[in-house]
Length: 303
Image (cartoon, rainbow, N blue to C red; front, side):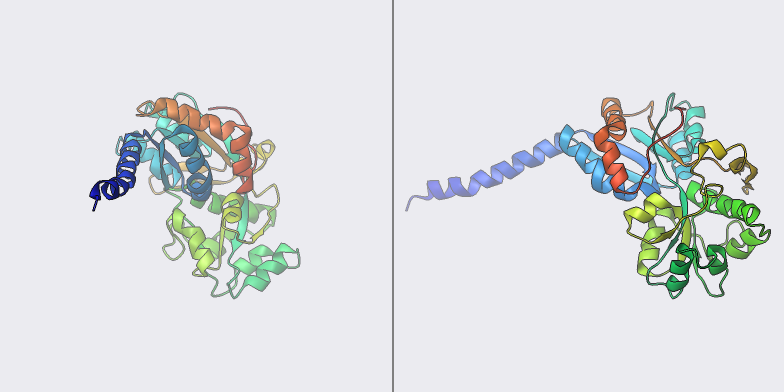
């Protein structure tokens, strides 16, 4: 019996697999630190598309933008690209000398997001149709509201700033305290990557968060007026700037339009890939992927 052809047939696919593994091991790795709410579009659309077109590996790191900014600034985390929401987290890494220039790549707006499995879902649906006040539903006894830590995540801060603006807009001075309680209410605060999954699972009833995150997770929402939704740069001076939060460390956060900024870090290991990734975010192809996941076009100037 001639064993050589059989051996050849057995070895050929094995050698091919070894070769492919070696190629994959040699592929450059692009590390992108991004605002945690962007997990779906980054890890399911933009990242894989970029990796395929550039014969590279993609590694996404999603957390609250402030937390990422502090880790990057302290050199406790390394990344090639940083994508954050609102200017403040990007300014942290700029002050650390890690970023010279950041460009707007997308935007979003604040909405009320609710779980379709919530026992209050019918009330929220009525509020979405204008038949009830959304803030009255949020004040119902037993309702479980979820938000992120305002000290580490802009989305958590923006939820509270939205409630502040709503209190002014609707002439409901106690609204923030009645809905959110204390600044860092432990019964409401969850990690950003888990917030939408908790809504999907019905573990919480509602959140005040980004329309883009809700769209990416196919969750129903209630639109808010422009004076509240942090989506209109023209309303910054007249409305948004009137809302602010003082964090436990003494830092004061002011409401800002919800724009996502991207930058290549000065200590990037793959700076050219980083530039190409930002080019993808700004390109027509990248904007289509962002729009399909619920993001609005970028607006405003570079930082």
